[in-house]
Length: 55
Image (cartoon, rainbow, N blue to C red; front, side, top):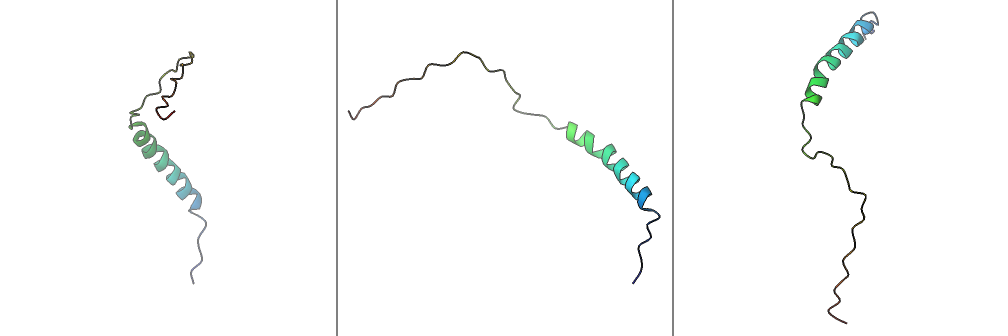
């Protein structure tokens, strides 16, 4: 059974991070949020009274 050679691991790790940090952020930043956050008013709305037709 062959043994793993740990020599190129550091180079593979650096190359993997370089690829991830090069390609992933532009793809994520390209997405647009369709529901933009809106500011909410601090004024409380008055609740509407219920209509009780069965009483």
